[in-house]
Image (cartoon, rainbow, N blue to C red; front, top):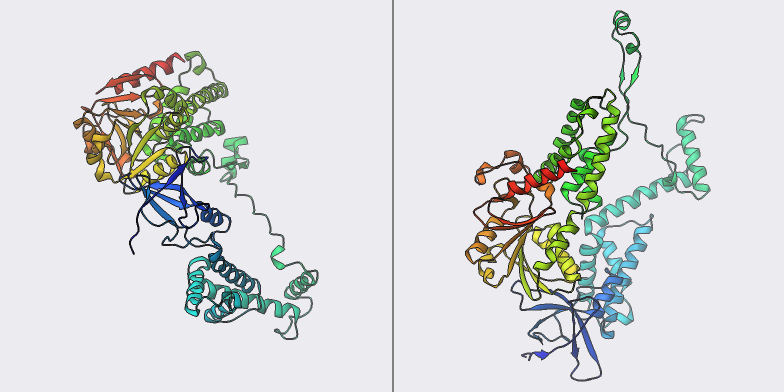
Amino acid sequence: MTYTPVKAIFKPSQQRGRDIAVYVLPEDPDLCMEFSFKRFNSQGNIASYVCTACRALKDRAPRMYGIVPTVRVQNGYFLSDPANTENPHFCEPRNYPRSMMRREIIAKFNEIRENVCRSGTPEEIEEDLLQAINKPEYAHFGEEERQEMVKQLVMGHIGGRDTLRSMIRTNRRAKRRRTQFEYPDIGPPPPPAGSSSEIVRRVKHEVLESQVEPRHFAIRPPSPPPVRILRAKSSSYSKEVGKASKSVMAPAPSSIWGTAEGFAQLLIDDPSKSTGLAAIETLFTALEDSRATTVNELNKELTEVVDGMAKTDHSSTSIRSATDLFRRFITLAPPELLDQRDFSKVLAFYRQRGKIFIERVAKSRSMIAKHARPFFTNNMNILTHSYSKVILEALIGVHKAGTIVHVWVTESQPDASGVKMFEALQDEGIKATLILDSAVGYLMERIDMVIVGAEGVMETGGIINKIGTLNVAICAKTMNKVVFVMAESIKFVKEYPLNQADIQKSLSTVRPFWSTMTSPLSILWLTTLLLSISTCYSRILASSHQLQLEKN
């Protein structure tokens, strides 16, 4: 039986840019079904919609319901029958018994799991689950269909037969423990009176009688970290060193926030934070905790922290550039201050400068988004590559300003970071389409503007960014499309690579999927300092940034 496409009726939804497709039932014009927008396909001409009522039920009870039914819409017509989808509508009354069967199975499984005296094989547990739905109201479902539902729930939601076996072993151990404590005559002979084992057994028995479970025993707090003790080697040595020969307690670090572990934890706690800003905050914490007495000691401590952060699974380019500029900024102190013997005043000056630097860097993204807004117009097709927090904030600002744009995002393999960018844009209600990396050349003639981020900006005028950026830029130059690079000024790196093989090994071993996009490609730079069209003007940007640091 063939299906004739039916025209859909669209109405706006609460989410901007995501309309609702309405299907009117032919047999009853007073009844209709609503479908919410989900995504576009890779070509952008077919949209997927999901049943609104089914998705609401699925969100309230994920384990109770199956797959949400989906329909495809092209040019305002339903390509498949919305009433008879591949996955049945569990929002309809005729499908309620199936949902109730799933609820009965899960409730029975939870009952078996909580019964510590329950034992048996996985096959016996599955048989008990089948008996739970052996009721007259489910008689119209065949036995094979009910067995298939139990099998799907056991293998999919409950965790499979390995989970059942683990649950059985846990129940058997709990049963033996309870039998031993509640019925000591049945268990092993009690230990001699007065022994430590007898005391422990008596305490546990008293706990069971007071209906307090053994797992509620107080746990001993962890012991403090060991402290290194430095002692004199001999009495003659102690006479020479005098007071220094006494026991010295080396203070243990109070936290991890000034180390590489703290740097990684910052990015985990706040995924929207940029790598450069997290590196600067980590270095500032190390500066606050520093007990250095000279500039050389302080530089050594900060260098160790930077080296530790560079070894993590994050962009070493952003870490190096941001920390270099931070250290250069805080050390711009007047000569009379450095000549003082009291180094604590120098540290206080460095910390004050560090706070100023962090406040300015934290505003970089919002400044770039503000200055980039005039370059976007309505109905513009934009191509971006990989995931960039700066570009995401700029596009969100454009969307909130009321400008309608269509963003084409490459998958950016092998880590599929473009998928993350695509999902973030869709969550904000921005119209976006995910495309293959190899489809850039095919799509470029439809693009009005290319925008990319940067992990590092070189003195050659090129950038270090995700692999594939160079391919996008070459296609854009061939078809006379403008390329925007949005990057914070903390990403300027004092490197001058002439080709791809000239990148430092430290920048390529940790993250092997970075490449450079070098001049002679014309790039429109958009940073927190100035805006200029250049082929090799990164030096001008870096020098102007240096002048601004010295002026402040």
